Image (cartoon, rainbow, N blue to C red; front, side, top):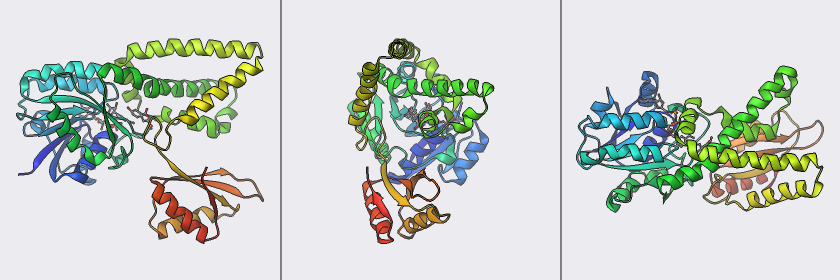
Length: 365
Ligand SMILES: NC(=O)c1ccc[n+]([C@@H]2O[C@H](COP(=O)([O-])OP(=O)(O)OC[C@H]3O[C@@H](n4cnc5c(N)ncnc54)[C@H](O)[C@@H]3O)[C@@H](O)[C@H]2O)c1
Ligand SMILES: O=C(O)C(=O)C[C@]1(C(=O)O)C=C[C@@H](O)C=C1
């Protein structure tokens, strides 16, 4: 008999976890979502094999249960599990962006003959919903586990075996350490992104041109402000202490910047940017790390209407998928630059070869 996985919350992350499990295991995947529409979509996209009528029904024979709901919901649903019949030896995990409160809550399952291990795949997107789910969403990313000190090693290994199709790098942290670090590199940046958008929205009331003028830099730093408000509301409520601490140190930092600008201190201002550049440039961009790996190729292109479709059809002819394409510069009568992102070094090398064969000038920075 096939083993059974039950995914609760069939959105971007629940859907992606399901697809990555299916890629490696011959299992029956059941799903449940509060939204009928998401559940139907998950079935039609074959993200799940069957839909459960309720959580109570879905958990009964599941070997692995994955909570992929917003974190406050996960906390509440864990409590509900106490009253449900669970399969002896089942492993339960979650994918929430915060860990401390969820891990604490899961202690309510201690007498149920199951093992809970908190999890957080450190990759995602500003998109929500099962339509955006991808089997390879977590490839090259860190997948953090926060087992309790007494969690047996065999259960951790079993969970990692279930999740090997994510092709992520597994690491273990305490829930407290997780929330402290994720606060700085994920939660707090989302607050900053949203606050920059608010600032421009206010300015737009004075001068509507501002939003139309907002170009590359603003778009890059505020992409994540398009993420799910419900998910981020829950994360801020869960990671209150870390975020209040980070807000305080950010505000001290902004005081420093204000002083430098007020005093017109050219040397300090230069050093401020130079130090930030040097730290960021040293971050492991091409390896697994805080910033996901992108393999970018730059292509000089003439300012001609058919040029993007020509480049993409060359790639399609050789079955090379790209993850992003954008024009960095186009001005009349001069060459522009296309930036194309690939998922792997191999795809980038093949793209470079085939584009060069067609007389395109390409380079890697
Ligand atoms: N989006 C990211 O980048 C990202 C990355 C890593 C982890 N996470 C975490 O993953 C979890 C899910 O986020 P997502 O991006 O997939 O969000 P999503 O909005 O795409 O999906 C969440 C799903 O949960 C469902 N849901 C809500 N309440 C429910 C309930 N009571 N019962 C069943 N289903 C319910 C929603 O209908 C929705 O389909 C969150 O805890 C988030 O913190 C998100
Ligand atoms: O790429 C994005 O859109 C994300 O915001 C992904 C991101 C992050 O902050 O890096 C968001 C929340 C998660 O818990 C993990 C990953």
